[in-house]
Image (tube, rainbow, N blue to C red; front, side, top):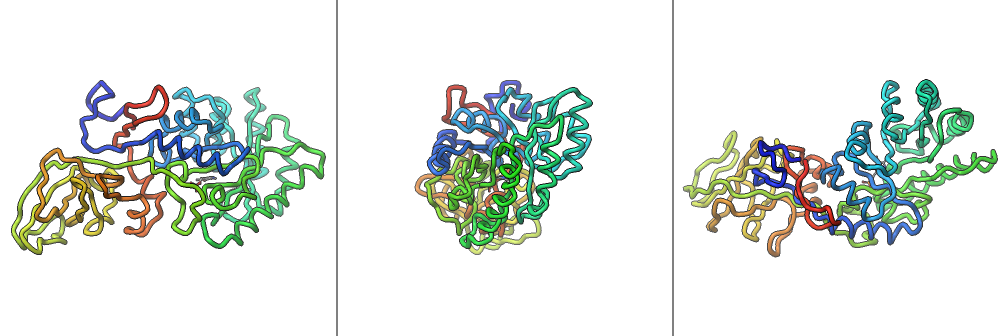
Length: 390
Ligand SMILES: *Cc1c(COP(=O)(O)O)cnc(C)c1O
């Protein structure tokens, strides 16, 4: 449902929207499949599916054949369950003790990152008369959460003896699988596989092993193991400029708006907060109803480009919270003309990667910055495709 004053969720009153190409999303699932072989696929859909809209995107990913979903926080898992998603959902992030009962209530898989957390999980499951589904998290060098790889046997041992928890999987996370230099990734993989020797050594069944994010899916076939956890590549974006593009991907997201105001100005006319830009010559300016309050970064002030009528034009002045201005030179534009912030128009294209580079960040942040004030419009995809969602 879009956040609008209208009851009918097929009508968007805002000209600003994110368009999500579900056919491209499906093509990217096939691309992952082509590299991942027989490994299961857990699609990473944290942070509103990297800005693409959690529910609709997740449903399309499942329809396209991914087996499981990975989210960062409990709330994201609950949102999926409330929307009727029944596939396995793993909450990848750390847990706070009092959240555990909700994982059981909503059948969400829990990341157990220490012996103490596992004991808390077990105690809660016992008290509720249920069983917890856990994935054990090992730190092989990311330094975020998880028991250290050389200490992992303690957590494995505790899990083997736990009465109310079922170990569904064991996982770790790469710090630089997207980089050209493979050495640290290979060391992490070696540490991971070394720790896992605990299971055969103790005559225990091997849990599902997973460690590969997009960087590893793209360039480390040895790291695919039993399941892969791609995020960014499913959305058609490579994790890094350095990464080997071993499979073609199709960008899924476009960010669009429409011209809301047009004016001709004289040389010297200043634009926007603090007058950081003044017309070097007589020119024409259009105003767009989108700003940093939508997640169109203020860092693009006097630096970003926008497409109008198939041509590229520079942002003029500071981007405001809800509006920004574009210098279209001697060209014409009319109120209502489409303006593309991210995506294609005519023969021109502004990529997520280009914006990331211009403002000194990574594509992940450019995607996740686009906030829920912007309606998402879905095109293509399976039978129940189309429509809007925030
Ligand atoms: C975000 C995340 C992923 C996905 O990473 P990408 O680089 O987007 O493929 C996988 N696993 C974990 C634990 C994550 O936090």
